Length: 246
Ligand code: PGA
Image 1 (cartoon, rainbow, N blue to C red):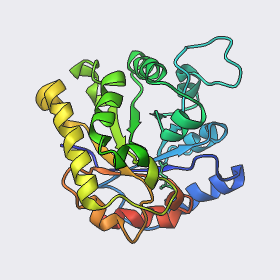
Image 2 (cartoon, rainbow, N blue to C red):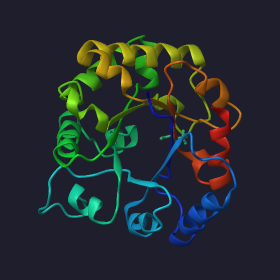
Image 3 (cartoon, rainbow, N blue to C red):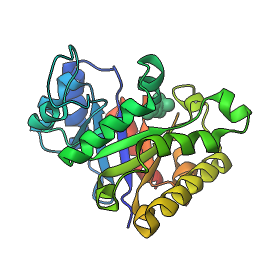
Image 4 (cartoon, rainbow, N blue to C red):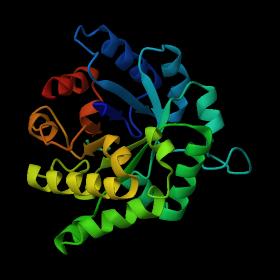
């Protein structure tokens, strides 16, 4: 059985008091939260406070693969875990493009998560240019091969995948359900070929301009197990509202 996951990716948004108020509001909203795994990927400086409330799965948006050392401005898995962080995002397209994170560096992060048994969401997805050349499936296949297909099946319980077409992130332009179905079914096939039936249990999330008006059709796609939500996660009630679209 694959978990249904709704993950908020706040990116570099909200202040400390706004982050606190978000969690209070999320917890106060009276709705059935039992069928979906809600996760919150917050800026590092808020993780400790948010995790203290123990009311929700709290994750980090990035991590450095080394356990410690001279990496000014970076944060290690040991440090994240020491303040209650329960998982991390790896390979978000904004990290890949703005901070030039290579496939090889992302593989190091994946291996560090495996070493420390820290769950992670591995993000993949193509640019508009690649899609227009109809090379999106081979591009995604290469992203998966470079960083996760070497895993042992015993480590797959740590892995969630998020398919996020770059052209749909923060643009208001969502992939249509044919495009989403095609890529999610393709990723599922790659996982099955690499890990046999164990690969089929990996949850695959969709991300890219998901909101209350398109969530129902996206979450109805057979290989979509949830969403990684940016803009629509900045308000707790908007985010929670998406859960009713499953
Ligand atoms: P968006 O961001 O929902 O604002 O498009 C999604 C993401 O980048 O994870």
